[in-house]
Image 1: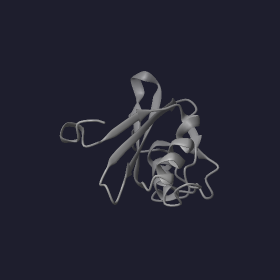
Image 2 (image 1 turned 120 degrees about the vertical axis):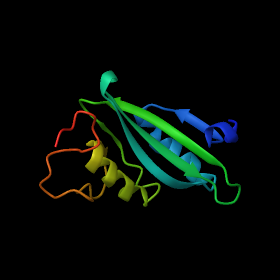
Image 3 (image 1 turned 90 degrees about the horizontal axis):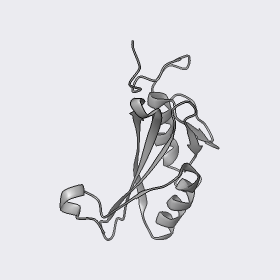
Length: 127
């Protein structure tokens, strides 16, 4: 268990992309809810990172699962089958970072125009 006062989390794990759905199921089976999904661009390392934040509404525990994928092929499995609310977060992350969530039921733009060919939160984005 982490020192919550220093990290804002009780648990944190770094997993390969193919284990994200298993981790999501593990948290769901224990009463956790999905709070947010956040993307990060590690341009110098040629990687994209996705952070899944979970919370337990009874015990007030917070946990994060981190995974990285190659920037050249930024895709990982959708978590929307475990947490339906993940669909919204995944669409937003796809809009801003270009990360593709394989198996997503509707990975259409959420905030960007339908014809957008850019991802504005990538570090190499220029308007």
